[in-house]
Length: 435
Image 1: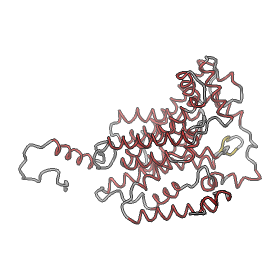
Image 2 (image 1 turned 60 degrees about the vertical axis):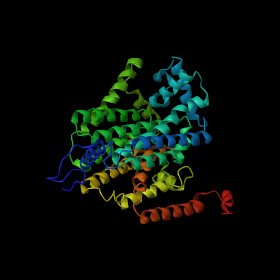
Image 3 (image 1 turned 30 degrees about the vertical axis):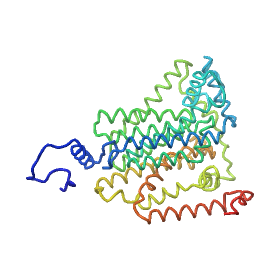
């Protein structure tokens, strides 16, 4: 099999190899195995330092954008979380004593880090309260870089991080004391562990990583239960790649182990088991969803994605569609068929990540006893901002010819016209008249 000129041909003189030549041979062999020098599955040269510098620059830009568009504590939920965090700092927090219908006391991923920053800075001001959501927002973008680098290549990771930094809804909630960005961080971290575990061939490394990935997902039950659908994405991906793979059981074991650990700690403090789930059941109203408007309720998020100023213009969704249609385009002329197949499978992991959550929050139930549809709010869509950004990046980073750029330009123009005609408030259209 041709070796690209890195190794001497049979019978050729074999002299001592320079350090540079040894490095090129090592990279070439790793590329044949489907791994590059810095963890991805591409044979691209190692440019980690440059990538990290660009990522830091993107994160700095994201920080200043979020500070310039600061929102602060404008919802009622913000003050509930802040009050609970203050109770934790003062040592008088007990989730059972808060009230029989208080869900916020069980959202540990939100209130404990918030309390930590209150204690560290000795202040409960707005600027301190938004530190955790802000760090979660930027942290998710950073994790997307590493996920994209591992699934595809570093360019995809950088594009994914940049798209997420510029994602409108994420910018909005990054400086709001709400759970959207912290729980996004948890999901992205679990996905990162799953991806690294899946790519590692050593079972004694793979299984513990899978276990921790599942344990992280269990935290979503205490705040955003629909986020646990990402476990379904893991299962669909492994089913597609292997058909049957018992390693998936390590993820489920981690999920169960995480629930047990949280419940054990809560029981030690309160004497209650699974009180969080009892609170959720008490909160559910079997008549919450108006039956007279059931058709619109089952189309809520589709309307929000394409007709809401918070999430639109939603160029990303169209780009993902183009990526799926064109199999995320060619992955380079030098890519082997096996490597290209693996990349495309990885692309579908991103698609499963987005689809499992989106379909459940649109068509799923809050209460199987009463078949109550999920409570719906536009801001819940922020939970798919990470897979949407990564899925779009997998296509945008593959600009290999003029046709890909032309297709993207056509989509952007079409969406801009749509946004102008359908979304932009009429009283603001005059701003564009000079243009």
